[in-house]
Image (tube, rainbow, N blue to C red):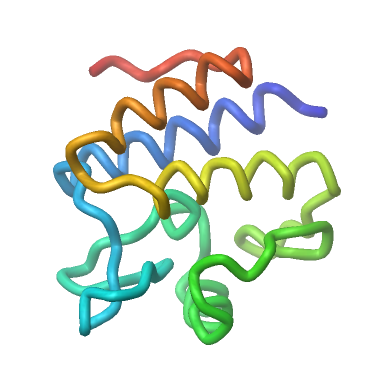
Length: 118
């Protein structure tokens, strides 16, 4: 597995979530997570997707079961990369703004990644 690629993805998600003040990306009704939600917010994985991918995957709801074959900006994921992104997505989808940063830090530690400058 390419650790540098995972680190780059983590950094992009971290920086994107931080820029939106750790607020989750939700549907208009505020019930469901979305890759691209209200107010221009994105979920952790949503920060990595092209607009077309986010739109297509949002039709599946926010937990489509990311697996091999899922694409990130046209790059087709291998199984272990998809598993990492699924864990990244869960850190977003199971958190609210008060603990999203903590969940992301925990994920970084468990994956042997570093957290960007806070």
